[in-house]
Length: 164
Image (cartoon, rainbow, N blue to C red):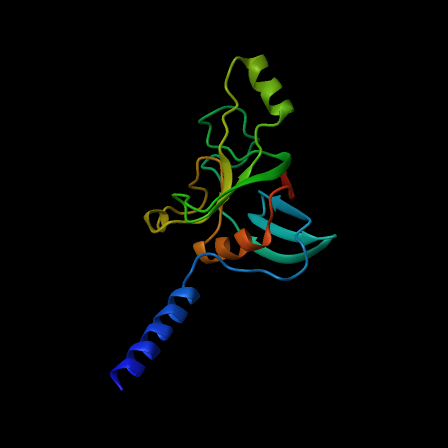
């Protein structure tokens, strides 16, 4: 009887821990583009012109202009690619955006400044729960639960369009 109880309780614990994992699976249509509308504070995961999922987002603390230089708190605008994944992010999970592109670098160099970098789509850790909207240093943020789904759905190489 004790052995049976031990096996059942171990199995139940393993099943519960699997349910709570931040790594989800996704078997639906491929996300072919991510579209962000900064002014509307919306992000859409698209499949060939159709929105699969839409999310409310938080942005950089100076959200109304295109990112120009390191530390300006702005979220970039333009055409980029999701180029990396960080499963150990300080912001739950994160997907890297390949900012700065060649155009961003050229504009910053012409002005004698660094364009910055490390722009991500990421979660919202508890320490930022009361930060209000537009609290990031230029990234795009969603809830941790939403980020888990986005992380599963969006693959490296996916284009991302960020509009004003």
